[in-house]
Amino acid sequence: MTSDKDVCGTDLAPARLTVGIVSAGRVGSALGVALERAGHVVFGVSAISDASLRRAESRLPDSRVLPAEEVAARSELLILAVPDSELAGLVSGLAAAGVVRPGTIVVHTSGANGVGILAPLTESGVLPLAIHPAMTFTGHDEDIARLGNACFGVTAADDIGYAIAQSLVIEMGGEPVRVEEANRPLYHAALAHGSNHLVTLIVDAVEALRAALAGPGLLGQQLIDDQPNGLAERMLAPLASAALDNALRRGQAALTGPVARGDVAAVAAHLTALDQVDPRLSAGYRALSLRTAERARTNPALIDLLEGR
Image 1 (cartoon, rainbow, N blue to C red):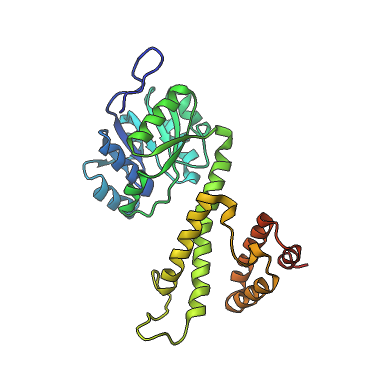
Image 2 (cartoon, rainbow, N blue to C red):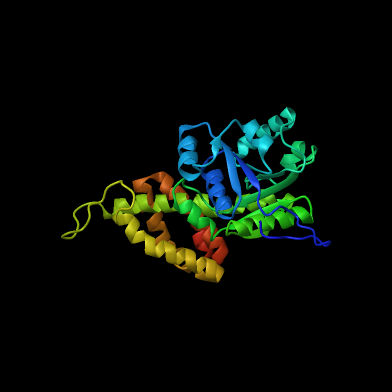
């Protein structure tokens, strides 16, 4: 590990750690590769599903697949990369088994939780850290490359913990960002809203665009079907990419279109057209248009329309 020192000049962590990962899912296996590239040794992982076993074999071929308790017992750095709903049970089980040695650095990757959820292990003398990569993981090779451009939300119990977390994230190529324990749910909600709901928005827009483009096309035009990465996606991609870039660069000034302009007739026509394709598309458009109109402080008559008054 990159040398981080406390006020006495003592190294906060050894230069090379023995790493165990529970489990070899999309996140855990990607972090394992990043840590190995930084010089640490991932000796073992736990993997149960066929997908996790294949991921462990392909991404971490030198690591042994072991039971979670054995991985925990032999680790200097223990990564708990299980779904949020399983984390508390895993921590309680490891604490009850007494397999995690005092002094072990225990990291979980849950966005919604800070270090409080690790309390059963902290009581036995481990160093608790919450290190969450603010990135979506698909299980493909791009996951590892994307870590180099990702921020990581880190929470620790003290300054020493923050220094170690910061060093680990920097070694993996990411940017560490401090998140207070009490703010973890808000932090997670913001990321989920901006990423998960973006997928729903884009998929809904593609569905509507496919319906709009259906029928005879120009000579040589690709036929419209329901397969991903088709004509509708290619048409939407530059517009959506530009909108995202503008929003991140310019904030609310990036708002354009009929809702921002307060064009009641255009928005009413949109709602009618979407309703004919799928009333759920129309409902989603209405909800997002209302929030857009509120942000833009646009025509009150448009807000009345969107609120159904």
